[in-house]
Image (cartoon, rainbow, N blue to C red; front, side):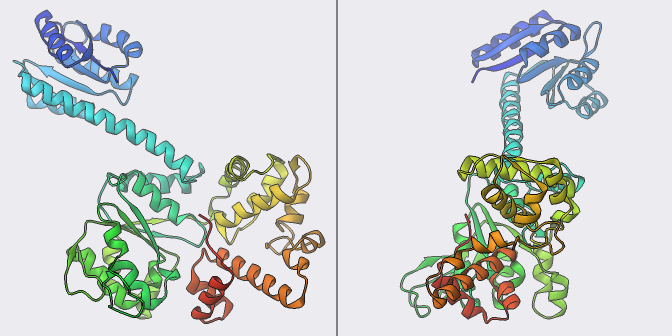
Length: 462
């Protein structure tokens, strides 16, 4: 890519010397002698960098800088001065100058400043691109104040190394926030590794997180790296961290404090460089009071908190989310494109959505499949999605029951199995695949639920 630089100085010798030096570095250079000329050239040239003299006839450099930044808030400007003072340098920095060089100009310093400034331009451009990708790829959709607050917090914390604790109800999009933080961070080229602490049996969580050595327990047939090792250099997302056992919490605390881990069955320590982002739908203060969560671990994890609002707190975003999900399902799911009637959108926005965004997405998919016309109507919303009928649940009208999968069972035994599979899958989705929470909801031992998940081949959507 050709780099473009604008040189603005009323000394002909400086203009020519800078032009010659920069062209030798394969830079496309445009030079001019005044601030007013620079302002007229800038919109068409769109330079990656501007070298701007402070003291010029007519409009001085500081005024030119101010107007350039008004024209383009992302303009990268290096100020040049033969009469530099601290006050001038401070004022230029406050106006947004990238750097300040004093005459006589030193070639090495100019080239170093050039390289650093162009790297800064590249990074800024990449951040703009990634921010757009965050919205498109990770479905952080909406313009409500609540969503803008979350996005603003993501953008502030992502470039840092700070740990983040994401809180919110099931289905609000906590994983999307974690992925966005990783994508916008310097660790983006490195792995993003997710662990659902609620979906792993207590006796296996330490092996999953820290790895194990061959023979360290029954079934350990080979050495295996854990999630901390796999995430080295990148981000480890501890989803449903409130469901982690106390013994695992102690090891995680050590990893955060000392940057080292030990595989199960090994006395050897391994250094890891991992940024930990955690999420929970629980009140960890209440868990601490009940003796189920370590207070010192909470302090380590909760450096920067991000609370993801429930859908009922951002109803204004529902129409936009519906459009987004409908477009995604049409493009990737092979469903027929349909228009949503304004009254249907109002009814969807008025619903409380206890399952939040996940439940809304499932409702949109159901409406696209089961509605008959080219437009989804308020009647479809009430009949198929069960919204606005007083029960707030899914549609259970005669048409839906007749088309239910268990109604096609050949025997009563098959009917029971299909119904149980459907019911368990629905409960897992309601609880965002938190197995512990689902087991409590069903009043079923967690081990039994794991067996049923395996028997029915249930798996979370990618």
